[in-house]
Image (cartoon, rainbow, N blue to C red; front, side, top):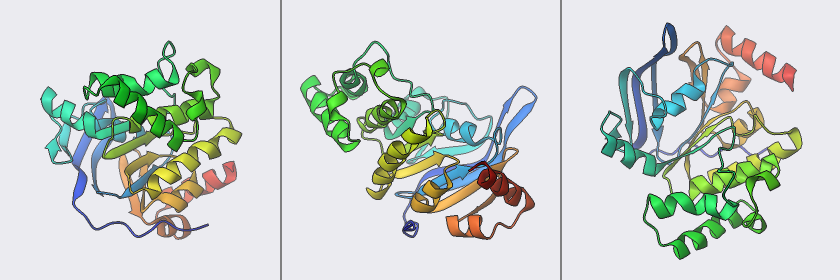
Length: 255
């Protein structure tokens, strides 16, 4: 399997410094620091409950961090709603549960935000949506409703919908975990193509072959901390900590 290209040396588009997040007494993120360069692809892995999803949800303020700094594309995340709007225009997110509007067609799902948020003319939004549906290889599904599609097709619509906002950064929160095994490959293939185009990506996933193929860097999280970080080869072939060795043994056993 081909390996990802070397990580780009360019300005950071995501900067996290000493980020903390708690839910009541549960301390989910414990001083996490992470820098992602423009065009870099980072995979977050780790056991369930280690803070991976919370981390990426903090990047576009779906979760509010309590301590530390998060700067996205030069804008610091605060309670300033204008700053938040600026960041969300630049950051696309794909969830494990698709989150498509069931009462809208595939095409309508993809044109809604560009028309309402970016004030794009409807005809232009439709043309752009069809372009991205062709890119994820399901243009023929445009007139259908989400319930008429397979899980893999719905997730590819979710990716196309996010791309329709022309984000600079894409966040993926376990995008294949809700899919049947035969549908996982079609979604991963779409993500690989997106990665090959140079998109900045942070992806939470347990798909280790995908991480080897796409990631410039893998960060292993456990108990709210980044325990190890490095190239896929370094982490998977020569893990340094017992926590990562145990995690990898469990993942490999599960496959």
